[in-house]
Length: 410
Image 1: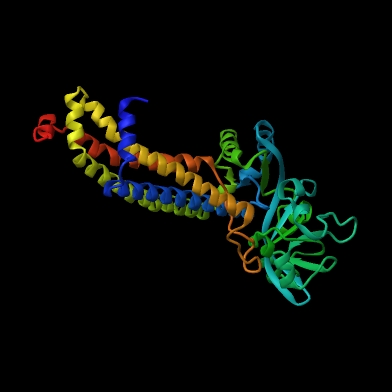
Image 2: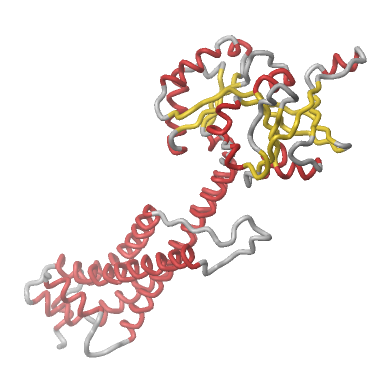
């Protein structure tokens, strides 16, 4: 330990007396501790809610979706297959068609989204079987009426259960049906399964059927609307999208990731997170002002000591270091204590649910918390930066003290 750090430590924690400056330093440590702990807890809660929302929204969404947006694109579907086979980090992919239809059962009608999918890949891409609460994800029909899977909310609105029949009326060719007084394209389906994905949009508005019936009802014939892709990790979606955009003509094909599907929501959540980070940093800033005040008063009180040290050969740089070390020591103690306190609060919430939620009103029974090491790094960096700035000003004043003026009356 060099003499600068030794003296700064003695200045901060005096064994002989506790004065007003020591009390202010102690308050500064408490302020930094509270600010850092609050930042860790709030950011961890944001992480928890973000992961929760993301998991709900991604329950049945693909990681990447390729859609044909031009008539020329329909004749170049093989380009999509070739690109998907050549791109890394892709686990599975499947064609789909989707569109609005009218569902009718027992006098109840609902406008819903009909999605025709490849039954073999239905579980890999959308996880239908995982979310089934009644019945199965069988969409084949086995020679009889074709089968469909519908969401729990939609089943409640239509008052249907597994085994009931639903009639789907397609809007394709509806104008011709009106002018020629003929029936529009319709198809009866048997409900093979009811799913609950915790995604209100899917549970209330989506019906899954086999691809060939979706093509027929929505007027695609033997064409498909696009391909849904599942990657080996959702975090690789952007990379997969970039690779696909290099291989496919973006004038013919639209490529979107799970983030693009709900970009506005994710952006708002990110803005809220950074706003909370900046506002809570003000708590640390206030504590840092206390540090600045205590060090400034310490410089005035220790003016004689500074003069003696300078007369003994201590340089301006050494005096600067003494008071810088004192301020940084306050920052280090407060930051370390705050990180530990914040971690303990998060740990208690994760393992002991100290802040429960009513599961009858919410989809979760406790406040979601997710700890990320990156938060600890950024919070520590902000805290130490503010402590450094608060220490620098009084330390420079101390270094400029004239030794002769400081000790001539002693």
